[in-house]
Image (cartoon, rainbow, N blue to C red; front, top):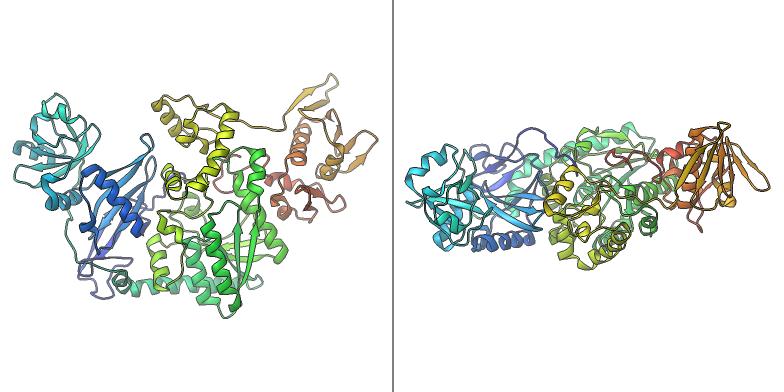
Length: 631
């Protein structure tokens, strides 16, 4: 997740006659005459709202304002624009204006709504005083409010009785015109009694774009966008063909995750290379949604008879085994990516395409700062036998969905369950809102993960809030998380630590170093990995690996850095979970994973002691391949 992507001011074009959003400057039906621009909050990665999204939005607004938006939304194209914030916030767009938003409160752990002036107009026109959270203001207060001033209680004529401090409210003139929206800074009783101080913090909003448009269907959206959509499709296909020609010595493949972006790339590949055939790689992390696995299996049964090769890089139970070694993953501790993704996909490529593969992936620049800065074609440093390329790098989510709908592609049914992202169900990069949506929509999956978190919380001595407020998603709490903990009055340790194998190092009088471990050194196991450090010599009660001598009671060396390397080797020998990242990284092919023990084994005849495998092992203090943070 990280910092939001900012690509300049964001907007969406809208055809007033069709009453649909446009991805270009012109409507394929009515040209440019009926097109206007709507400014939205950056980055502007809009998507369509599904039926369950709309039902949920209606429920959030109903709870707050006491009215149902069903009539307002009926037959309309509704867009959701995810915006930066403490947690998930979505602008709600219809009829060519921003109606309002829903925001997940990370302190109250619930969704709250808000209205733009246009949305307030729409509700007031329909419901008037039968809705909640309204304030009638004195005519003399209107001009100051429109000039940017807050509302004082003295300027209030009447207020709806359910108003509480920090509620979103609308301000209406005596003549019944909506003036502004804002946040109540006092309860109803204080507003009614004219208590001194700010009554409502008023939002500033310049333009008012309220209009009621005609009903529209997805067919209307596709028709209006048909020309621009096909232009984007052809550009993406030309890109794919050009890259394939440049890397003609590599077989073509598509990385398919089960999500919308990879589905769009798969669709493009079928259009461009379908007759020639290509390979689909699916990475089963072992912590996928069951619906995703069923969906992928359906696609496999459909595509394999058409000559499309399907390869599954299966992590099996690697996550659950590794959990006992690493502790729960975090945004700043994403060992899970290496264990369940990079390792299995590296080994699958190495096994099937040892000379490498050209992998088309569904990465888009709107997703993160890292992806925005990444080139459209790249060499993956963590998967050395893969060259990656993104045909939809410049597409917004809206364009991805338009392409999917235009080709009638079967998409993952989880999108219709209010899940915005499809991936590992327990991903630490998930927002609190996504976690609570998971709890509501897939309680059995959350229960399994929550039980694991409870065990770890007890082991770390964490309060219940460590789970409830999602603090488990950090190994070292971020500044924002520490502020939330302070506001809640919860004592959550700033950093958690879990090291199954611990060591201490002492400098001896002669300048050598002795490394002690909290376990007896298993010399037989050390022998299997010792070539990593250097030439191996086996004695009666010791193993020498380069400059280090291992005995049952510890390690001995004349060099401090080699003492640290001895500790790293012990960790790899004892804690290896068989992810396979190092296997793909080894330039000599000297590494393998023992199928029985699921641990690394080194071929001493091939190993050149380059230690490149040390640089990628998720057990060690190395860079996170996903976000560049320290593991």
